[in-house]
Amino acid sequence: MTTFRVLALLPLLVLATGGCTSMKSLYQQERRDALHEYADPLTQEPITEEDLARLPDPVQRFFRQAGYLGHPKMTNAQVVWSHSEIRMSPDRKWMRLATHQFNAVPEPFRIAYMKARILGVVPFEGRDLYRKGRGHMLGKVLNLFKVVDAQDPEVAQSALVTIFAEALLIPSYALQSYLTWEDAGDGWARARIRHQGLEATGTFFFNQAGDFIRFETLDRYYSRPDGGYEKVKFSVAVDGYQDQRGMRIPTGVRALWHLPEGEFEYWRGTIQEIHFDVRE
Image (tube, rainbow, N blue to C red; front, side, top):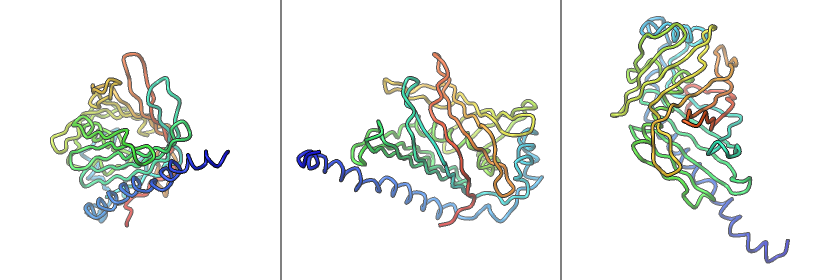
């Protein structure tokens, strides 16, 4: 490579490397704020049979099967993804992501930071947030140019649905007053989440062993190519479980849209571990 070409690329390299921390810093600061705001109200008490009594039978079996009965109620969780990837349309290739995720329980809160390289070259960073009834999806390339900055009501609704879908990954969610349950069938249970004027219903499915295997809802918004939104069937599938300090946590997780033209799996990841009740 000639000296001229190196000099021509230098500004881009500086932007790509020198600016990579600010989006992650935003995630870290919002995570710290949530740790301070939602500190310790649940962790003194264990999950008891009395807590489970108001849950449908399949959900009670899940708590017992997964080893959560008797475990302290979780205030928050850091989900550690060893692998994750995304694709933006059914005809696109998968793009590898580095994903960092933190959830809080007393009031539904979720933040995720994602980092990737578009076409294997251009640095991309994204931050997905739900807090106090509002959602915000922010994405930048080279940590300079915004390519996503969505704060519409539909984004808030969809971000809350994401927390809803994760209710049994961080099972204290299932015990909160903003999430209510109703009896359904032997292998499934319906629930409703309400928060800050937002509302969604969904169905949780379980296998014969009692493991949670799938979540489905019609209340999440799909972002159309033309820029609009429409409600489309959305599901999350859990592929297998692993032991973690006496509890069973999911391994593989997949997110899918069920479009009129067919099923579109757009996100998938592998959980390495889940840290409950993390501190500063």
